[in-house]
Each structure stands twice: as C-alpha cells, then as structure tokens.
Image (cartoon, rainbow, N blue to C red; front, side, top):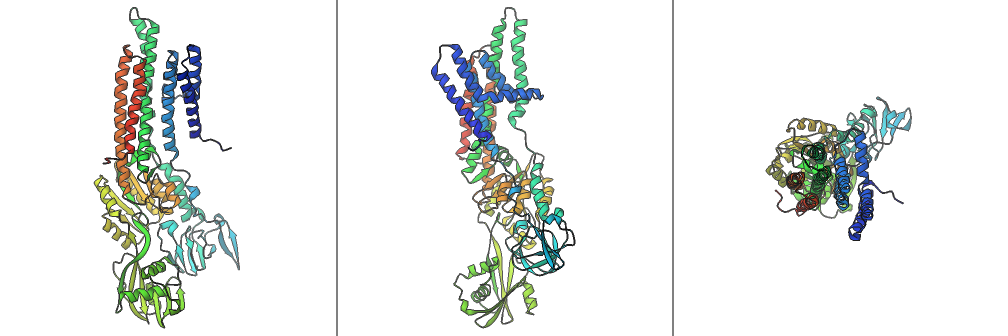
Length: 622
C-alpha cells in the first residue's frame, strides 16, 4: 500500500475530524460530558498535532508563535464550555494550513536529477588501446577519443579529426558547431559525426559540465526566502494578546472592588478566542492560492505563493534568446543570388544538401518545398566542417561555409552585418550567391517587451550564447535595453550577478529561459520563468514560474495576476485587523459575547475567503 504524504495525512485528519464535529453538532447531546467528549475527539483529531508542536516549540524557546496562540485560544474555548467553537476554530485553521502546504509543495524539486549532461565514461588512449574509464580518473594531458554520438567527457583541445558538435546542452543554440584540430571542446556537448582525438585541458572537477552541475545544485541556495507573514505577525501579536488576556484576568479582580475573578477569567478567555487570527491564517494563503489558480487558467504555473508575491516587485527581466524570444526553429530568411534566379539558387542548394540531416540542410529542403529527384544527384561528398559538394544535372554544386569556398579556391565576398548562418553556393566553380538561415522571432515577443515596459519594468536584458551580430539584431528588433552575446552558462550567471547590482534592495530580478543550459540562471534569479511547452525538463524544474503556452507576453499577465492578488491580500489584512481590534476592545469591556467572537473568527474569515476567490475570475487585471 502506498504511503500517504504529509498533505494527504493532514487532509485525512481534517475529513475525519469534520465528520466527528458534524456528528457533535447534529447529535445535540443533553449531557454536557458527552458533548465535551465528542468535540474533544474532533479537536484532538484535527488539531492535536498543532498543540504538540506548540509544546515542542516552547521547550525550544519559541513560545509566542501561531501554534501557541491557536492552542491557547482553542483550549480556552473548551475551558469556558464552548466546545464547538474551540473545535471549529482549529478546523478552519487546519484548512488554511492545508491550502498553504499544497502551494508550497508544488515548488521546485531536485534539479540535479534531471541534468542529463554528466558523461558516464571517457575513452582514454593508452598506447595502441582505448580504455573506458570514469571521467574523474582522467588527468590533464591524457589523450581521449570521442566517437560519433558520444558525450564529450572533459574539456579538451582537438589534436586530430573534425566533426559537428551539438552544443545545445551548454548554449541552447540548435545549430551544431564545427570543430577541427586546434579547437577547444567543452564537456557536456555531443559529438554528432566524425571521430575526434583530443588532449584533456582540465580535470573533471574543473570542467564545464562539472561547473554547470554545481551551479544548478547550489544556485538556489542563494535565494532569499521571505519569512511568512503570519509568523512575523504572530511574533508580536501573540505575546501582546496573551499578556493582555492575563492582565485582564488578574488586575481587575485585584483593583476593582466587587470584581469577581471567575467573571474576569471568562472575559479573558473570550478575549483569547476573539484574538485568534483565523481570518488572516486562512485568507492570506487562500488569496495566494486563488492567484495561483487564476494564473494557471491562463497557462501560467506558479510554484509557490512567495514567487507570486515576488512577481509584483520585479524591476529587471532578463531573457534567453533561442526558444524564449525566438522560435528555436531555423528557416531560410534571405536568398541573395549572383547572376542566377533566387528559385534556381535555392533549388541547387536544396539538392546538394538533400542527403544531410543537418538542421541547416533540413531548413533548406523545407524552404524548397518540392520533392527531391535523387536521379539528378551524383557524386555527393560531404566535407566535415565545411559543407557539401555534389553533381546536380552534371554540374558541380558546392554549398557550405566560407571555409569551403576557400578550400575550392572560389572567389567570393563575405556579406556584412548578416544575422544568421550563411550558406555560400558555387555552381561550376563560379560563385552564385548565398542563403541566410536564421531563427525567427516569436510573434508576441515585441508585445511582451512593450507590455513589460508599460507595467513599469525598469530594464529588459537578453543573455545569449549566439553570435554578437545575431543577438544585437534581435535585441534591436524587440527594443530590449541591453544584450550580452556569446555567453556560456557560467558567463550568464556572472552577468546576472552584475545585473543584481542594478536593482533596488526590495526589487526583484526575473530570468526567462527554456533550455537545460538556462537551469543555473533560472535557479539563481529571484524569479526563474521557464517556457514550458517546448522547454527542457531541467529548465522547467529549476524555474519558479512556468509559461505553458511558450508565449513571452504571458510574463506581463503573470505580473498583473500577482499585483491583483497582493491588493486582495492587503484588503483582507485590513479587514481582519480592523474587525479584530473592534471586537477585542468590546470583549475586554465585557460587551462582546461568544457570538461576537464567532463573527470575529469565522465571519471575517468567510468574508476574506470570498474576497480571495475574486482573483480566480481574472477580470480587470492591471
């Protein structure tokens, strides 16, 4: 049988206790002892753990907390014979605690378990043989061999072989990078095709993959978790009302002629029952819970009430580029022919690239949009790190990067200020133009930036591992305030630390990303926001807020939900404290009865709960 978690146990206690309590109400026993036993059983089932916690805290020096106040107020109700009230107050309190607990438990779980970038082994060359060893055992200067499809286990320098390397785990960029002898390899990347021999430059503990794992596991510990309002409030409120109640029970019988101790003890206990902060205890977590529910209806998952509250205080929003502000899908953006039509240039290029599964080749074939006639293609030669040479209809067609053109001694001119990957094309050894492949900006990204600035965000920033010209073009297109390019995950965290210095002491910094490489900065930010529809599991797990629709414009919506929620919380606090203050004064002078106490507790709680539910409808966010 599956073991119940803490929330399930609490819910079970509440349900069983509520049934016993309902039986006590309906039974209406004439015998006071029977009534006491029934409500006492309900009270022990519902709130026995609260009383025990209060006792334990007293022994640990934490006397005046909400557990103590709830215990003394409810026990006080029992001592003056109002058993139903004592049990009811504890029931309401536990319901509020349950709602809060559910919100908290949905927060971030273990991040490291989802980080699938740690290499399992390294192929170390020992003489003429290869030994498969743990990456921790490899030393600087050892020669490793990385086969096609394997993860690069340690940072190293290529000494032989060339290949395409998938760096998406580190940079988030979909286009693989070309590597050749002399280039540096970063651990955590994946070798896509060729055989690579490399010399290790860093031990595993200092390698890129090890640093990323360490950043993800430890960055979240730098978050400042704001103390729960109720605990703060109770720190001052609880000792104050307990001292006042004690004075109310003791001083009048000693100072007022004819005063009866039992009467003033009754007033003091009524005072304690009235002072129970039930409305606050329930309505505040419920307001946040309602805000979380209202956000989820709009495809925004908030993992805890503290993050919902922090959204309203955000001053700086930092974005990743690929998959966050852009679609992460590469398409043909521009065709620039030279003495040839655009259609023919694209057709020849698509045919030359037709045998490759490289993302650039796939985007060229998609742009061509017609069926490839393989009979027209002969003598295909894919030159690793350069491009493809093939015969199309008897003509030699070369499609690739600038290195391919130089290798074939073809005269060409590099285009200036191109934001994307350039595919140069030569037909019959004559340069015929180039095609630009680039990522597309999401349709609502400009709207997202505009809405954030309208909402009062002081600064919008983009951090990307992409090339400078590409990052700066996207930033200019969207109207971002700052952009930092060609960054690895550790560099992004460093930039984040610099940006933290630019906000006010109470202001918050939010980071928005979608890839596994974004996990460290998502964890480090005050609020980490992940694109959940297409984002990696690690990013979603590391984030505090998840945008399930992949629309960056929902970030401004989340902030509107947060601000409305906080307005309702403040209204509930003002309502509860005002009513409490009035009824407490009436109770102290003997005017307020237990019915007034019930209203101060239950009535205000119901009003506050009804107010809290308003945030679910989502109307009028501003």
